[in-house]
Image (tube, rainbow, N blue to C red):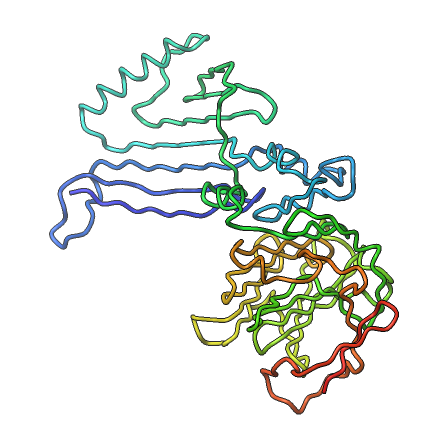
Length: 401
């Protein structure tokens, strides 16, 4: 009889590699059907992740991956990483590539045939060592490490302390911790598209660059980033400036409409490189009911597994907004870096700064006449419809009918 136990933990960038732990036990089953306790047992622990180079870079004093402000090192927290002509995949693939593989095996109470073959393997590996080795004790444990340096075409292999370096491997393919194979193919083929905002620079679905610093804003105005402009709209996302800034080039907040609901996220001071454990509040609908997503995610409907949207905080301290109606996902560092993903089939029905054609005469800025919250209306509140829009001096005003 053989029985086993496996435990898998997914990668969290710079915090935890892909990890697989477990054991396999061989022997006669006990009378009650339980796993044998005193028979042959193999324990294993496998790990795969980026090198320590990425962790050291994030902790360093450097602020950018390039010589511009539009590829800050904080983009490394996103999955996938938002890109533009100022922040290409080649700028960060050395940090995100899976470069370190480790496997630890331990053997207990193994049969005689295993002792024979492990001893022969021990002699073979010892003979390939550049130093004299009496025994590698491979009948007790085997520790294997493979490492591909971020800036060299070679592979370093270590087995129980014996090192080898294999040179000249220019075709060595490296997996990426931010793009699995299917995800990478989806973006490279155009099946998925993304619109990003990095330090005030928008990179649209069509890789068109827009500088938010050139858009005039007011504290009570919203700027449309992206919306579903189909006959049956599902969502809209607005950027809201901070109260002390006259431009969206610095930190900004969000207003997100999804279906019959909306919520506000107010802008915050600072940047995502700072460690911040303070509450992360969203304010729901017209009643502006606060909810701390650091304590628990928010979704609608609240107790339904088939939810319309969900808002949560992930392990990288990113605000994640998921809209299931459009299979769209937002990632927001809560300061000034944002990435919006959508399937290409929906791109034609999107409008706003993320989509062409852009209308420079109407700069997608909407100013509300009355933003005072009311407390008499229960949640959820439908988006006020109908509404009329008037344009005065390049600024639009929403008038609720």
